[in-house]
Image 1: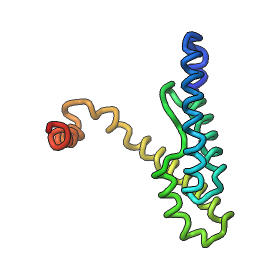
Image 2: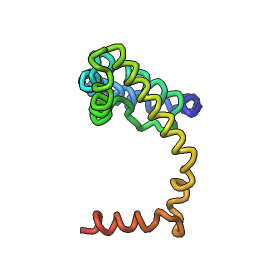
Image 3: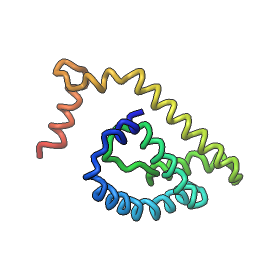
Length: 144
């Protein structure tokens, strides 16, 4: 677990800055998580639970110290749009469908990373198949 490794190599000189960053993120995260929970069709507090679980999971399994993890407005809207018509007004069914959708998306993402990760890792090679796509994007969008 990469998070445990970060704790072992933590530099105590970072503590003050990390505490200030934590308080700042908390001040932003709480209201936004409440809003995203409600936007997704749940009680607002569910957004806080989602953020808490995501942060704990990333603290254990993530490898970067500089990352904010939590619910997102786009994801909340998509969950509401997909799940609401299927739930037929039943809040328990809504929660079960949203959880199932989240797990399904996580499994699909994991499968795609496992099966296509070679494209991500080899994309910087000049002979890779993604080189023309990146060059096209650069020429169309970045050289104006």
